[in-house]
Each structure stands twice: as C-alpha cells, then as structure tokens.
Image (cartoon, rainbow, N blue to C red; front, side, top):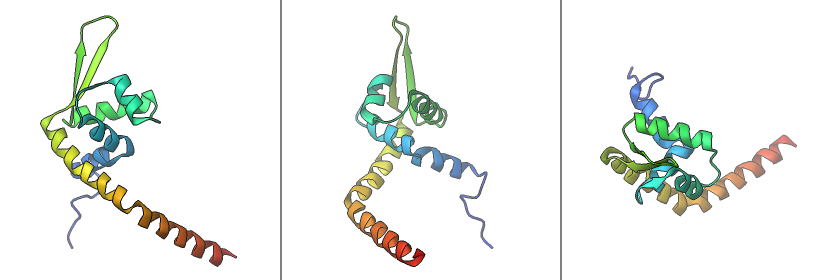
Length: 123
C-alpha cells in the first residue's frame, strides 16, 4: 500500500496548505506584480483582516516565499516582495486562479444542479 506524499504531518502537505490557503493564494498573486507595503497589499486583496494578513505573511516568509524588508524610518515602513521561490510558486498559483476564472460558470452550474437535487431529495 502506497502512503500518500501528502499524509498528515508531512512537510509537503503543510507547504501546500500555506500556498493554497485563501490568503496565501491572494498574497502570492498580488506580490507577483511587485513589491508592496503592508497597507497596499491589504487594500489590493480586500476583505482580509490585519491579523490574518500578518499571519499569512509570516507563514509565507518562514517558508521562503516572501521577503520582508523593514526600513529604519519613522513612521515605520515595511515592504514585502516575493523571493525567487515565491515567484516560481506564484506562477503556478496564478495558473490555478486563471483556470478557476475560466471555469467558474461551470462550477456555479454544477453547484446549482447539486443544490436543486439535494433540495428535491430533502422534501
């Protein structure tokens, strides 16, 4: 019996979860356009809390996808950019996002059909 390379506790699964989390995907996509300050990144993503964005950036920085540069100025200024590893990951995440955009109407039709069948069966 083959053990999945994405078994619970394996490093690949953890990295996959970080990169494909809702906010991880959006951070990688937004930073693929260039360096951004925290407030710019939060504004461009939209809907993300300051706490969640901070957590996501820390995880992606720890994994080697994001570089954080704190400037010694007042008020504090911190810039975020992708590392080469992060830029490579962003290409693949962008491809998945593009696929999603191309097929979202098919997905919503499938969801509607499922919901209608489920509702009819529940009656």
